[in-house]
Structures are given as structure tokens and as C-alpha cells.
Image (cartoon, rainbow, N blue to C red; front, side, top):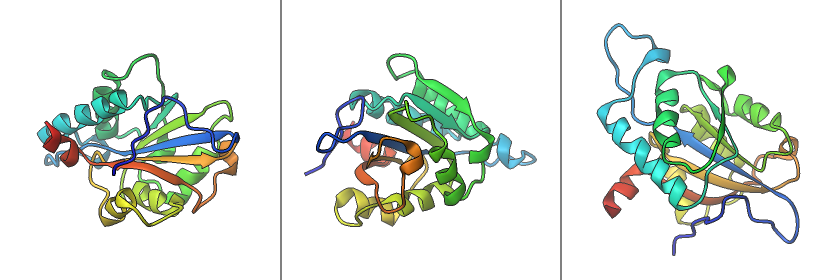
Length: 190
């Protein structure tokens, strides 16, 4: 049975505060000749996948309060397509530290998030994003964890909850994976 979060803010665990982290890998990008990596646009497949993930986030009421987006064109374009489908105002910031970042760098970035933020999304790149998801994973068991560990494809989405009052307290191996979704899985449902 698939467990899917269905609330805007993270669940409270035994009355303790909780932080929700959403990790989204950019949608599939193109590789045009003569274009620097940071300026690569989305491929047609990416332009189809990003709205699928945005609709999934909206349907599951997973709109984050704050989004940190790599400055790369493919991450910015992914966010632009997703943002159109989310209700309300979501604060997005371009964060240069996310581009080509390691898992340790991204962990340091998220730990600096203001404690008043309950849900944070990072839109970034592999291998750093996948490495961060694996680093945070509390359990390697279950359908979602198995899929995440198998492959973190473009536009892959992981949702973690942490028992923490402050982002600075986020530790490796403590993230409860609520869901891991791939565009391919959503496309099959249509």
C-alpha cells in the first residue's frame, strides 16, 4: 500500500515539531551543442514531466513554504512549470550554492533555513541530490525507499519528514521518507 502525505504542513510526531523537506531533481534537459552546462534548457520530455510533478504536489497538498532553486536554466524552468500548478504564494529563491553541490553542501544549505519555515523544497542536480536523499534516509525498507535507492531519475521527487524544531538540527539517517515519486509512475496513471 502506497503511503502518500496529504497535508500542507508536516505531520507532528507525538506532539513534537516536524520539518518537511522536498527534494526535486530538475526535469530532463537537452544537450544542445555549444551551450554551457548551466544554460542547458529542458528537453521536450522534461517540459512534459515537470507539470506532472507540479500536479502531484498540488493534489497531495505538498506545496512548500520556501523553494531553493539552483541557478541552472533547467532547474529554473522546472520550477517555473511546477509553480504554475501550486496554490498560494510560494517563496522561491535562486541559490548558487545548489548548482553542482555535494550532499554535504546541500545539507549545510538546508540547515541554514530559518526555523519558522516548516516545509522546504530544494530543486537541484545529481549526483548531489540523490546522495543527499540517501544520506538522510532513516530506513532502506519499503517501496518508496527501494525505488529511491534504485534510481533517482530526472524530475524524481522525495518527501522527507524530520522530528526537529529547527533545520539546524537535521541529521543524516533521521529522515522519514513519506514518498518517492517519478514522472514515469504518474504518466502510467493517466
